[in-house]
Length: 169
Image (cartoon, rainbow, N blue to C red; front, side, top):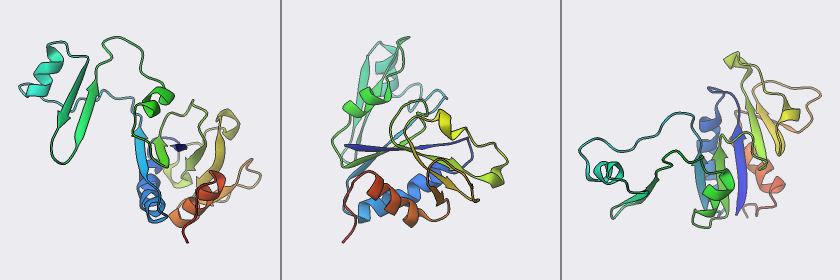
């Protein structure tokens, strides 16, 4: 599985770009999954629901399955959060996994910079695995290629080449 990260400050457009390039990768014939990191507590359950009660009773993992999909909820219960590599190992094999967040990890990544947001751009030298910056402004002297933030086709084409993935025919 190839992995491509999207990193940048909150509100820079990581999710927006990811959901625009994902169908382009699919159109290129790739199978694609995603991993999203959040600093917030995630709780898909509600008190009184069966799976919530399973968790509260002490289940390490709860699988909720239907005819449309399944969800695995894993409780850390005080243990450290799993590193990206361990999460990827638990996923079904696909051609490409798009990762949002996980900035400290060395996977190939694109830094999202939206000058219009007013937030400073992280120092590219501090980002292991940085292969490009997608920006809404020119960045002369950038240490990696600068891609047009509002052109998902250009970002997709660059990523296909950078990750040695097949391009659409």
